[in-house]
Each structure stands twice: as C-alpha cells, then as structure tokens.
Amino acid sequence: MNGDNRAGALDYQQRGPGEEEAHPTEPIPRVAGPLTGTAFPERDGISGNADELTQPIPALGRTPGNVRSEQHTEVIPTVGEPHGSGTSEHPGTEDEEHEAAEQEPEGKKSLLKASGSMAVATLISRITGFGWKLVLAYTVSFGVINDSFTVANTLPTSIFELLIGGVLTSVIVPVLVRAQKTDEDGGQAYVQKLLAASGLVLLAGTLLSLLAAPGLVWLYMGDSEKASPELATGLAYLLLPQILFYGASALFGALLQSKRVFGPPAWAPVLNNVVIIATLLVYRALPGELTLDPVRMSDAHLLTLGIGVSCGVLAQACIQLPALRKTGLSFVPRLGWDSRLSEFGGMTLWMLGYVGVSQIGLLALSRVATSSDPGSWAIYNYVWMLLQLPYGVIGFSVMTAILPRMSAAAADRDHARMVDDLSLGNRLSTVALLPISGIMTALGVPIAVALFSIKDGSGSTEQLGLALAVSSFGVLPFAITMMQMRAFYAMKDARTPTLIMVVMTVFKVLMAIAVGALIAPENVVLGLTFTNSFTFVVGAFVGEFWLRSRLGPLGSRRFLSTLGRTLLASVVGALVAWLISVGVDGLVPGDGLASGWLRLVSGGACGMVVIFAVMWLLRVAELQPAFSRITGLLRRR
Image (cartoon, rainbow, N blue to C red; front, side, top):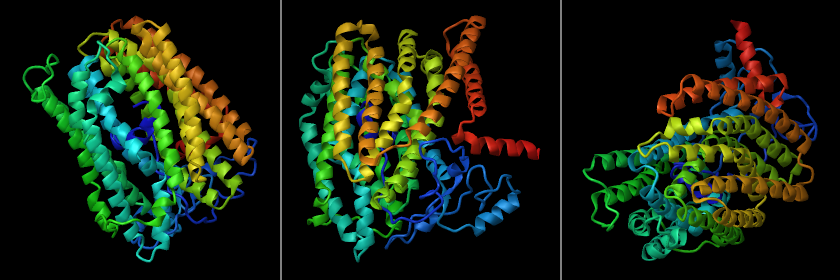
C-alpha cells in the first residue's frame, strides 16, 4: 500500500508488520497534572523550559470491569530526572531512584517513557518486518515475481481498510471505553454484538473479494506486459483470506487497548513477521523455480508463499487471545443490534470515504509503476518501508502516547491544552525524525547497497537508493499529517481528515500521471516516491490551515523555531555524512556489500554526531532533558 492507506492496515502486518495508523484511546476523564493548563505558559514563544518534556502524564483512570490495568500503570522514571522528582537538576543514586519510584503515585508515568515502552515492541516489529522484506528481495529479487506478490499482498490490507479497518484503527476504541464505563455489565453485551456484526462484514467481504480476485488485480496492474497479472491473481486467491484475519487481529487489539493492555497487540506483529520469514526460508529450500508461464495453482512455490504469508496474519490474531481472556471480557459473538453501533455511523462513513479516496491514489501509483520497468512497484514499496521505519519506531510511539491526552482535552473542550499537546507532539517528532531524514537523504545509495546488494546486479539497488534519497524529506511531514488527523479524530471529526485526503489524492493522481508521461521508464520510481512524500507536505499545510481555523493559533512560532534549528543541524550533519561517504568510496572503491556498510556506518555515525552537536549548540529545547542527563552522568564520573 502507499503512504496514505498503509497507515491503517500496516500496523497489522509489517506495520503490524507495521505502517502508520494509531489507535486513539479517547475520551478519558480529565485528570489534573503538570502538563495541563499552565505547563505551557508561552505557547507561541520559546520558553526554554525543557522540563515540560519530562513531566509525568496524568493517569488514565480505571474503568469498570478493568481489573488488570494496574500491570500497565507501574511507575517508570522520567527521562533526565530521578524518580519522583519533577525539578531536581542532578540525578540521584540508584537506590534513591528506586525508593522514589516506590513512593510515586501509581497512576503517573512519563510521556517519553510511555512512548518508549511501545517503541521497543514497535522497533522489534519493524526490524522483523524489514527482515522478511529483505529475505523476499534476496529470494525473488526485484522483478516480476516481487511486483506480483506486492500487488497481491496489497489487496487484503486495502479491502480490510475499506470494509472496517479505518473504523477499527481510529474510531472504535473510544466507543469501547465509553461502553465499559457506562454499561452495568462492563460492556460485555456490546462487545459481543460488535464482534458478531464485524465478523459478518469481514466474512462477506472476504468471500466477495475471492470471487472478484481477477478484477481486483486488473485494477492495480491493468494489462501491462511488464508484470504478471496471472501470478498476482494466483497469489491473491491465497492471500485474500487475510482480510478476515486482519479483522480479527484489529478487533482483538482494540478490545485490549480499551482495557489499556498494550503489550500483546504491540508484539503480535512480531510473530507474523517470524512466520513469514520461516515461509520464505522454506520457499528458498524448495527445488526449482516458480513457473510464470503458465502459472499453476498447484506450484509448490506459489502455495508456500501464499499460504505461509496468510498463516502469519492468522498467528498475529490468535496470539492475542490469551491476553483477551485475562481481561474478563467474553468475546463470543452475539447476534443482535446495539443502538450505539449506529452512534458513530457518520464517522464510519467518513472513514470509509477516507480509505476509499486514498485507494484512488494507490491505484494511480500502482498502475504507473507496473507499466514501467519491472520491479518498480517493488522498489517503491521497499522505499516506503524504509521511510516508515523511523516513523514507526519514534513518531508512531509519540503519537500513541499523546493521543489520550489530546482526547481528554477535546472531551473537556479545552482547546488550549489540546494545542499544547499537539505542538509538543510535533516538536518531539521534529527533533527525532528530521535528523534521520537528513541522513537518509545524504546516504540513500549506501543504505540501499548495504541492505539490498542482491543477485540481480546493482542497477535496481542504485535505483532504490536514489529513490530513498529523493523522498526522505517526507518522513516528518508524514508524521505531522498523522498527528493532525488524530487531532481531528479526538474532536470526533472524521470529515476533515477525509477532505484532507481528497486534496492529497488530487495532487498524487495528477503528479503520478505526469510522472508516467514525462519521465523515462527506468526513472519512474524516482518520480513516484517523490510524489508520495510531496503529498504529505501538502497534507501538513492543509491540516495546519484547518486546525488553525478550528482551534486558533497553534503555537507555530515555537514549532518553527524548533524546526528551523533542527533543520539547520540536519543539513550540516547530512553534508558531513555525504562527504565522509564520498571519501570512503574513494579510498575503498567498489559497489559491494562491504563498501556499502562502511560508507553507511562511517558517514551515518559521524553525521548524527554532528547533527546533535549542532542542536546542542543551538539549544534545541526539546533535547535539553537528554543532554542534561548525559552531562550529569559525565559529571558523576
């Protein structure tokens, strides 16, 4: 899938395995805390008060029926400060920190630490998701087989999003939270009816998709002679059952998140990725090659690839069942209708519109890519996967941790507090993601050579690296756009994100058509990856405009100051990284794996050191807690 819609389903496969969307957990009763109200006295200026970044988050209150939430609210020390201290300038001893942690109120934890706990699981998920993509590239290379598999594997995630995925990832958790708080049975009957209704929709969608598989493949590939619609169709028959499995995984994850149980949904994609890696290893061990002319459904290679990948998604759903049982919720479906299933009908329709519009952009990109050089669509998806890595580990975790706060502020109609949280999330994303974006731009080709030096030669690898370099600027705009979308959802507004997606898709389709008409086939993938990133720049500007009209000033002066300083540091560091990479290439010539890793490690490490050194000299406030912690540790030595 592309950047728009991958966000919704890829938290379940390689975003889950992983890609972009979050599961907001609103509305939670407002609890006064250090980050509410007066924590940001200078919203539109630079306060220089970095302590706001390390204050504990207000606790989420326990809901009726949630008897196990205490395991998820243990106290975790704030970054840059000793436990239990909101103002201390010097870190305490380990014993003091342990004692303070025991005395800290049970419900509080740091924003950065809340993000970090999910970032660990997300990091492992992204690494293993990236791992199976690497194994796939080494197994089938970049070409017709990879393109066909990519198209076929896109279908279940796309259809899942159209059916119910957008609702599950953005709307359903708040409704579940309210049902658990207000129903006498803790929301049991509501959950059972939700499971029954969702199951019927997913089952019907899966069966209809299997019947329509050839037509669905044609939508994404057309009649291009440079791809294999027959192979994609054969794989689609085996991969489309994932629609049902994705739905089960998403429902189970939403139920667990409504109980504030985040571990199993975060780790489930790792099992998915492990199963896929095992499948690809079995594929490699099979004798012979996959037959393309003719494509046979009895081919052991085709069956192994299709069934094995689908089993990964099934395992991702099943692994969450034990944790779900422990919550006390009964997840046996119950036929019947609950009036609250209609409460968010308007939001659901707008969410479906959002996904449907994003699919138009995806179709445009896919058709242009599959009609150009073989392997272009696979390269596009590999580049998008690389761009998703920093967002998935950092931006997604920051967004997930800050969403309950924005949702609580939205429920209280406290626009000032909501703007503060949105600004904080954007600034944290900026200082974390922009340096990585700079290094990716400078070292796109070495990254590709280091990771994808595969059997079909260096041409595809170099194209992938150049595509990464020309599109890396989109990492931060993508994160900001996603944060803006969630801000609207927190205000129970699904209409505006859909309209933003309409504007982005118009740009995407027009630019994709221009790329296909004006750029040579071998360079089409460069234009498509640039197009995808540029549409998020458009989305960020449009989202800023509509949020400003809704909430008033958004603290732009402070954000722009952080952006400007971080951008300057990133440009300097990226230039250093590029110069070192060129120097290493001159001293150790060659296009092989060793040369790629040497250029990547030396240039990347030096570039990042320079970036953070310049950010320290420029006094980027959002990094001061980390810098203070480091200097404190050095003093103690």
